[in-house]
Image (tube, rainbow, N blue to C red; front, side, top):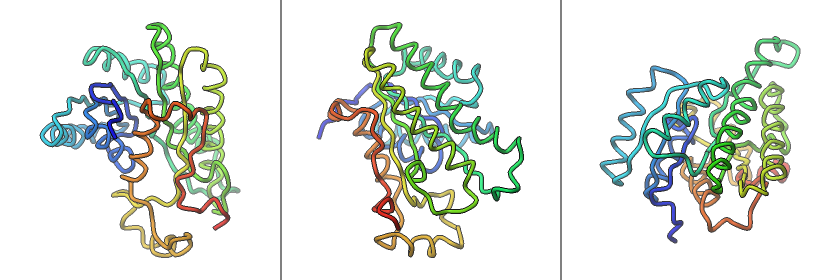
Length: 254
């Protein structure tokens, strides 16, 4: 299926590792131009190597942009750099996030604020800046948000910061459509389940976690990436404000 994403400019936050890297590559396969945003400065060389590999494999152009999506000036700069390189951003993928595992009674004020900053605030600032620019240009825009199954239901303890911020992100996804549909801004979220990435492949509890899933296995990042690419395309025009269940059945109570 031709998703008509060739030469579309896609900004992916947290786009150099894990699910984000898989999403970046899937867009590269579609011929999209990439703006890969990453938080830690030490990831610059690795991100540039990834983009060079994409260009060699798929002929895709891309730039790497370091910044903190939860800082207003950084969010603005990411879009400024995208405009300098490619003229603007057609698709925003809010994938950056942070998982805090502190037990409920031990959570500090700074940890709470940090989780909001890294997750919900970053998504808000990136979404707002994207929408402002698309509306000013009188152009439609597609937003794909990486959420989590915990935004719907969770049985995992020591996830109060993460679960709460993912709930906020789900609300933001829906409210984006409520407020911005008149400007042809579309937002959808993907509620992911247990995904095995390079970031958690060595987790000694991975086998135990997989055993608790309906199909006794984990999800590949590429599977999530394919959903993201579809949601960014015109083929998904019937879907807006949705929380796509990509939990491999875990929302059924497993």
